[in-house]
Length: 249
Ligand SMILES: [Fe+2]
Image (cartoon, rainbow, N blue to C red; front, side, top):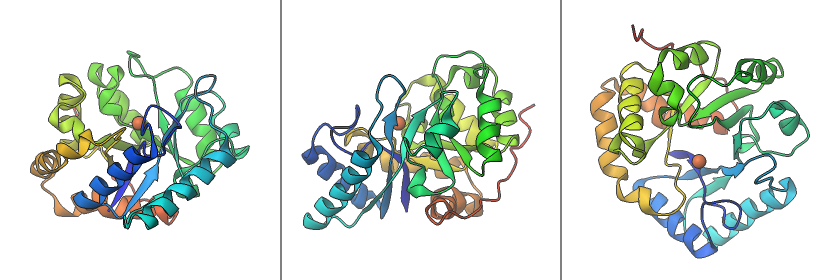
């Protein structure tokens, strides 16, 4: 099983503060059943602009450290890229990492916008025309989803894939995110799950959250896709055939 969203690289963002935290996170990840993690440190233009070469070197170093510590979890390149109008250039110019260097790129939108930010469709179209597939990070946390879940349906229908945070179902991000993820799971609007862990706390609610998710997604085939098949396809840069959401109306 692969974690689609994790801030495990030390000293790069608001995630793991030092290598010992990364090691603890790696151990916990292995305990709950992960064999691989997409390292998705924040890339925020004008705020947290990571240096690509340094970053991928840090991913490499963490893999070496895990080997030394006998942690059997592989760490892959990735970023959680905060939305900007030049996403395509950031990818093309090798300023940001796609997920395991695949066609899939994890993108975060502002949490507090009441509507889908104005340039999102244009920019996502540009990415898609160039062969990339945007994966939206934890939309259950976005105000525009709370306001109208159909805005997310429209994004999915335009080819955007959805990554939700496992802890959302247990209320880690508040009541709205909890309500939203439950609705999204019921309507088949989630394609991947991730821990979005910044430290070890989320692993404490992992089992309980996964249990709650399994109760909502009763279809084993879909559950297997969300948990296993789709993340593996990202790792292997394979196409994911998406299912459209059930109508929310
Ligand atoms: Fe994140």
